[in-house]
Length: 366
Image 1 (cartoon, rainbow, N blue to C red):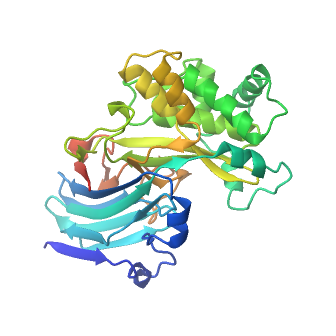
Image 2 (cartoon, rainbow, N blue to C red):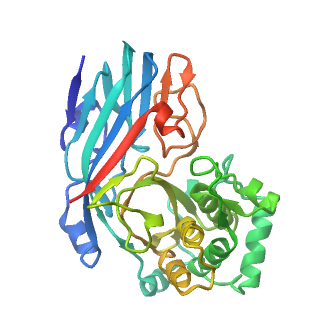
């Protein structure tokens, strides 16, 4: 039976959830983004499962922030028996299907994004080394299974700061030295599955400094945490054309096939100021795709831009690492949540295999 569900802007609370995923454009948002580039996209996430039987799906949804927010109802259609938002802290759409042939689910929404650009003069003015780290930020100092902060991670971070002569500098200058080291030394490897596992210590111990976006961002995050700078990865997906490089997002006539566009970025926290965006993974991706070296003019400019800025032809889902989905699935803990997760009977679907899963995602820029 084909079903259609509309989660209205004010209707998500009716599901028993405390916070909506949709944020209307407020005056504060407009003021804060007055000089940022605004972009609007219509997104369709289609899932047509090839296996038949009792099925469960967990789909990551966009988080609501000052730089991105849904501007439409979240529309669902398919032959699901039940569907609801199962987690708002890690925005998740959960759907379950009776024993049907080829379970199907389509999610449609509109989203507005604003480019993020950091004013480092403001960062310098607001930095306060004595400021307490907020309780909600403290988890991003902790070690996890894939983000370790001891051993070679801590040793490498200290060497980076020593070589850059910033051991006694502020948090932002230390993070900049770590970012420069990661962006210059880590290389992208297209043979790695998905976005990579992001096992920071294993990468550093191997002395083979290559990977994909999760690997590269995770090394940056782990190095920052090891010297007391809160940092985190943001898992998301590209939406459309980049003005810098097709490697960072592409579209034809504003229509983009984003099925394989999952991409991990990073942020670090400066006491007294807040979160600052960066993206060492895309530096490596452009270097590889355009066959450019570290000292090429374009790469130097990109490295400067991607420390403190995000071009928002991309949306962010969540910061989850080594966690358990809601409701609890067969695979626990999950390394990260940038891809759809699904189970048919006792079989966990391969979320890296879009055709075998199967899912297809598209985005149209308005």
